[in-house]
Image (cartoon, rainbow, N blue to C red; front, side, top):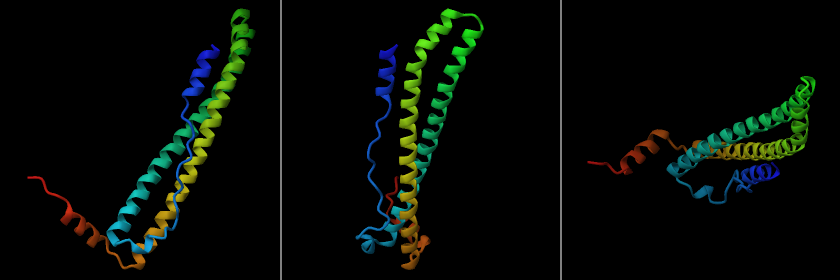
Length: 155
């Protein structure tokens, strides 16, 4: 049982130090309107991924908390039903399940926090780029027209 739980914990995704997104870069003044628009699009993608990661991690953390609660209830129910063997077996497994639940919840909470930070960074960068796009009098229609002209056409 311990080997299974240790294997499950080690299979949890490791929290990597995601590269931070700078709100302003020194090279921003050199960006063309299409490049600014491209970076805005990239921030939209990052925000979508960060939202998905944040939501998935929150769901995992909530599930781990419920698993911990359910284990305690199962031990009590087995004891009350008169199934001493089941109660003893569940009671012996409970600390390991609790350890797994705690580890899962900790990892999920950390990933949720990391995703929320990344989302905030992407939003700040997008706001800066949008301001830059507008202040340079860039026009979305020009950017899209230029992109269409440079897209290779298949015959």
